[in-house]
Each structure stands twice: as C-alpha cells, then as structure tokens.
Figure 1 (cartoon, helix red, strand yellow):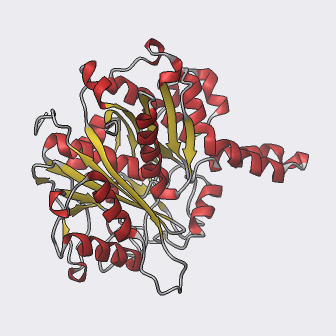
Figure 2 (tube, one colour; figure 1 turned 135 degrees about the vertical axis):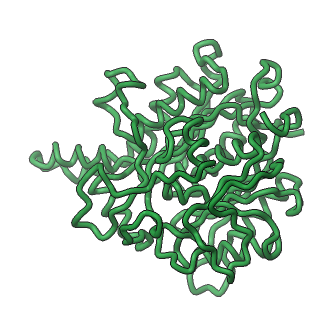
Length: 410
C-alpha cells in the first residue's frame, strides 16, 4: 500500500496578502492585488500591470548576511518556507538532517539577480558567461537556499515547467515521501518584475496591455485579452500521514492524485492533453468526476486557451457540472508559484467550507462553466482539483482531498 502524503504546513506570499491568514482573508473578500507596476517605471512597455507582493521587507524576516546573495524571489521563498515549517509545527533542528528534503519549482526567477550581475560585469566583458551562470544558479537557488538555511540534507531538486511546474514539484515531493523521506518542503515562489524579466515575459505574447486593473485579466470572459503577471506563491510542508498524525499535526489535506501530459505538436490534428491530465489525476486518486467539489482553473486569460480548458472541464464533468474558480484573478499568474498558491487556496477552501471567487469576470455563456464569481460560495469541499498549464504545452492536474480525520470546518 502506498504511503499517504499530506500537507501540514502552508506559507504564502501573494499580491493580495502576505502570510496565509492575510491572503485567505483577502481572497474570501475578493480583494485584488493587481495594479500598476511599482518596482520599475513601466511607462515605455506595452504591459504595465502586475500583481506585486505588498509589505514584504526582507530584513524583517531574514538575517542580513543572506541579503547580498539573494534576490526578491529567493527572499520571499525563504520567508514562506519559515512560515510553512512553523505552521506544520516542525523544527528542522529537531529532526535527523536526512529526514527532510526540498523540492521546489522555478520558471521565471533569476532575472532580477541576473540583471544586476550583467550590470556589474558588463564592463569586464563577461556578460554572456554571467547570464548563463545566473540562470543556471537561480533555477536551483530556492531549493538550495532553503536546504542550507534549515540544514536539510534529504532529497533536493527543482522542476522547471512554468505554471505546471508548481504541481509537478509537489508530485515529486509525494514520490519522495512514498520512498521513505518523512518530510519534504515543496511548492514554489517566483518573481521577475524587473525590466529584463518583463521583456522576457512580453515575448510570450500572452500579457494583456490594458491599464484598468478590473478589466485586464479576465479568464473565460468575452473580453479576455491575456493575463497579468505577478510575483509570489506558496511553500508547502508535505509529510507522511502516519508520522503527521503520530505527532498530532493539523492536516490541511491529502495529495490524493496527480496527472501530467504534454500537448501534441501544433498542426498535428491531435487533441490537447489537458483533459487526459485531469483524467489521470482522478484515476490516481480513485475518484469519479462526481466526487470533485470544486475545480481551481488554470485560467490563462487567452481566448483560445480558455476555450480549450473549458472544453476539457466540460468533457470530464459535463456542462456546468462542477463549480469552477480562479482566485488568481486577484493575484495575476505567478508562474511556478501559481499552482502551489492554488493548492493552498484549495486546502483553505476545504477547511473553511468556502469556494473563493473569481473577480471582475463576466463569464461567456459559450464556455458552459459554473464559474464562482464576485462572492465566495459556501459549500462543503471534500475534494478539490487544481489545474495548471505551462507555456510550451505542459499540463498538470492534482487532486487534494480532505483528510479522513479533518472536520468539515476548522
């Protein structure tokens, strides 16, 4: 019998709330964190809105010695890891070092640090080597820095698959739990709101150029014009259910199922892979579509991609067959931090009996979705499905289930 992996710790840094409590209060209230970019002057760029994490002062959360060797992304990840471990009631120093590992996701990070390195090294003619080294190092920096800071010597790794990578990292954490590691710190935090990172994101052609925050990021809306990028995400503590229960830990939810696929080559005539990813996740969880109480959508905000996701959801659950929500309309798309944040929201939804809303959206009737809009919807949530896609054809889906001994509202 496979070991059950459960989430016992949540650490959130989001554009509409710093810390899990503030994030969930804002999300329930439909409070958006999207506004005009403040971390640099965006006037010369076609896209000027972002979801920026408010009030994060690294010096308030981390020792000064870490600041010169990290950027904003890593600092937020380190702080979120501290919060997740505290929420789980785990002191890494009290456990054997090889009993804990770190597996995180990264997709857009490293731009801010790399930009600074290029600026410093340009005069020395080393810019090409610097750029390569900066990205190679930063793809692994969150995992490595979290490991070093907490003395963790168990399995370590980084998954790079854009938004889908956040779920892939949690799935890899579950694999390591099943292999015998008691605790894994996982999830993802991304941040690249700097000129270099901004230009890189613009090349996707998927950013909205609208300037009104309430009419910019509108997934499943007739007026959808692309997404608003953001920074932040969530770090989670995943551990073996038996050991979690033995120490009396609060369990936010069980990672019950996971599936991942790739889309076929454009022009191949084959269908997209998202529906199959959802079906694989449900089969892995031993769940029927009727067991799912809410779907946290990927919500690309690009009309063709929204249609493909709505078709996949409809094919599995039937027209308007399951409540669907996209709380990322309050934060923007956070790259590899977005799916872990949706997992945190799913866990909080299970615990509170509320499905968070999708804000500002007037859903197009052609999508046939039961989209939760404007206000949170009271509901008993026992099983949630989180969907994530990545630029380049990555598809991932994960089923989060209420732990058997968790009450309906705590």
